[in-house]
Image (cartoon, rainbow, N blue to C red; front, side, top):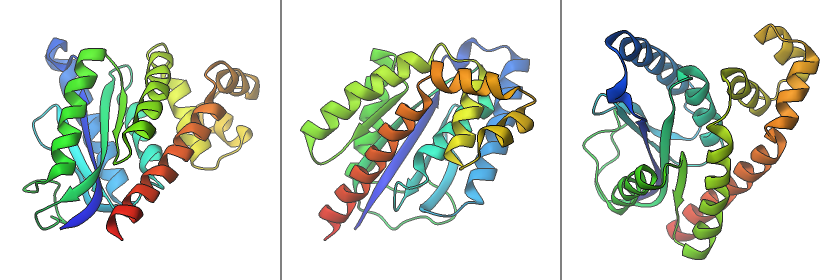
Length: 214
């Protein structure tokens, strides 16, 4: 048995997409998942598309987890995806080639999280061994979700690049924006607050894994 982080992603309202939109979204998703999978830091089982509109991965740690989520969100915008994150036990061997053929409570909890997100129209949810911590974090993530649903594509790219350690000048040059526009997006979207929140959540996730795996 392995203590790990299971992530399940699900494209929102993908059935309403035209054939052309679906093809473009699937191409964008494939490209960004391939890019993420080249960054093996923290990944136990690589991001894998499982049901056409769903994809999943297994992580050993949460350090790069939210960066990878922002990369997906930036790549597929204006399409959105919901993400359910769960710490817990994987009872089957870890598949290092594809995130399929595995099972355990961590997968079940992540799947339950997707069901909840479909009902409450959120984008992000976490399940941890400490339910009170998870309750507070999920309330915060729902606020982040509501904020993100009004974002343009540039704001997701700016969040991603900030998470990658780029400064405003680099971000502006890379996106073809003025530095003023980058600052405005950063402030209007409360990007520094979101980064602080998700950095703290990543630390809690790692502590949860280390505590239960001890």
